[in-house]
Length: 263
Ligand SMILES: C[S@@+](CC[C@H](N)C(=O)[O-])C[C@H]1O[C@@H](n2cnc3c(N)ncnc32)[C@H](O)[C@@H]1O
Image (cartoon, rainbow, N blue to C red; front, side, top):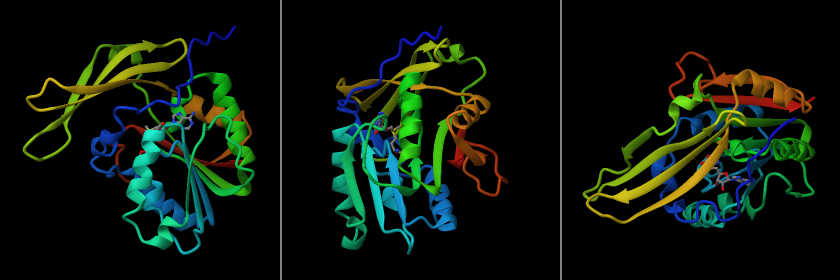
């Protein structure tokens, strides 16, 4: 019998840490953005839906002549507020393409179909309950046009995830005088349900004040992830280790990204 001790996260996630989120990804720079821009220029979708869009780091940078509407959903009001604020710095015609909605990717209903559904930067892994995972896949299929593409990203776990338990990684996020540090600590790794619990703490140099939040991600090994997608009615078009469409560069970020369609 499948044991499922996990809980899907609540609406309040990223309540304290959202303001640091983009800084943690070098102010939007992560090699995935170029990858999604290239895929969009190849498939030329008229409409995009992003699930778990966060601060809009990826979608806000997608442009093509054919692209008329970009709908973005996320559970976290705080992340969406930042997205809306960032969008104000873009030309009106770009702003007008966006619909930003607070919704859950498990059970959203937009009564619309999209040529492209994007789930970048591990957002899909925030859904940790396997029933919710399957519901999410059925739901996103309902929102995908017949020839539409789904692009979904996960991280590739290490062989023995238990080894991560207790490990901490710290990095400096800015170059300014007052440094901001991001510290990620791996908490319990639930190897039965393949769930990584971790916490993220941000603090300023020479200050005792900090904000921190705990998160959980369901992890998948690439072959089982492809099986999950296929056994839930999706066909694999391409899969990539990393973000190099030409497959010439090594995978520097441990990412696994799959392009699929409805079977
Ligand atoms: C790691 S962030 C990724 C954000 C963005 N896609 C990016 O690439 O920067 C994960 C995001 O997924 C959102 N999220 C988690 N579970 C969700 C759910 N069930 N429905 C909608 N959004 C969810 C979180 O609020 C968070 O903004």
